[in-house]
Image (cartoon, rainbow, N blue to C red; front, side):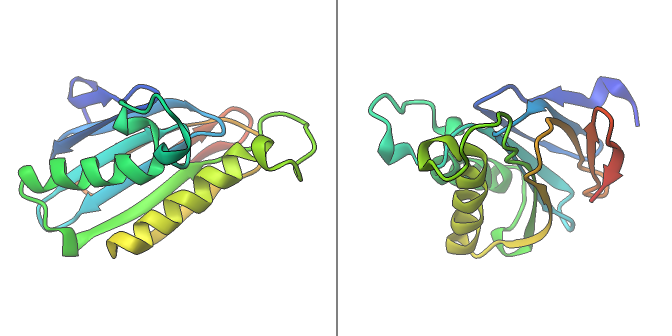
Length: 163
């Protein structure tokens, strides 16, 4: 697939594309990459969320930053490109514990909390989570292909995997 079809999604950002577009986001540490895909419409959406819950933060204008709001925006944008919510499936990656802190302290479990919040919001929206690679202690870069829904995960020292 041609690199000119690649759209970079930044941290606390999201975007959508139709085939033959490719969405990518770099540096998923404790952040979670939420990949949504409608195989019939060949519409893909990718969000790079940083935090689980917009209600816990006072300055929360950036909806792409939070699991609870990013998913709603992403679904709406995909529907504008022809996706049907009932056809959308999800894959997620990230949510790593990047630092060797005491993992029992709730405030330091950002990766775990991001993954839990993402799964909860997907369930509330009625979207099936069909694959995930989360946790561990390494960062990830992901690519989502609108042509076939392939979700490529790259991590230094871990190789390349496809979900």
